[in-house]
Image (cartoon, rainbow, N blue to C red; front, side, top):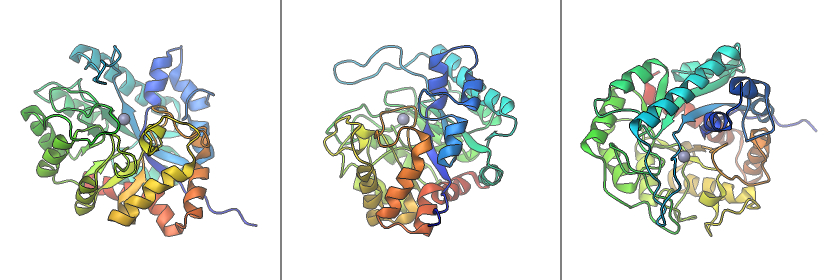
Length: 345
Ligand code: ZN
């Protein structure tokens, strides 16, 4: 029997930079390049699982734990600046030291070219832009340094918007919409052609962005609320808006966002993930679903240890009836189309 052709995966969200930065140690860039056993992603495991690239998040963790209602404290601007610069620097250092094995991509053409030469196609993304002030000046500097995607918020408020707190069961309709700063940020991103990621945004903010932005609506790592009613997941109306703008939802592998019971149960089978894909395909079509693993940022089904096991997910989708064309769309083509439309190249 001939083994099926592997499908390269372009993934909407990973927290490898956070993992490497948090672990500390003398040489995080080298550990990513040469591989280690910790976490979900490094270059050897990406190669093994045909993970061709993805949005690499810079995220500033909250210093303290959330309060009883699950509200996380927001980092100060100085704290955010320090951590954002450290992680962005680490991404660029990895590119330099990997000698061609990883490329910081600035266009969809860059991604396709990197995939062609089997260089990990990394997109510099920020999840929660506490480092950027109301004047937005830093946005321009970060754009020059390759920033092509940002989520205005993580699941906590900042000067731009209100991130949706983690609640289950709950709709994402918690808290007010964008501030004036947030509206200015979205307009600036539209002008600069920086993707505005809707994952972690509350529902009022989602609709404000839908009104302002001319780009396709994208939730890089969010699932279906009708299956798993977590506040982080998307309602049917939100999915419809994503379809209407030619956008996409990237399926988050986090068991807490997949499981209909909301339990963080790693024994959840991969079929639970396929169910979210099926729902989106049936509701809004095959062109609007992709992957947003959340590797190195959440608890994933134990059937998949790390990025090296991605072919198991592709196989589960194939078993569920997705043919080659559908698998290509889910694994990478939808992301490439949407990023090309957003960035204009
Ligand atoms: Zn996230």
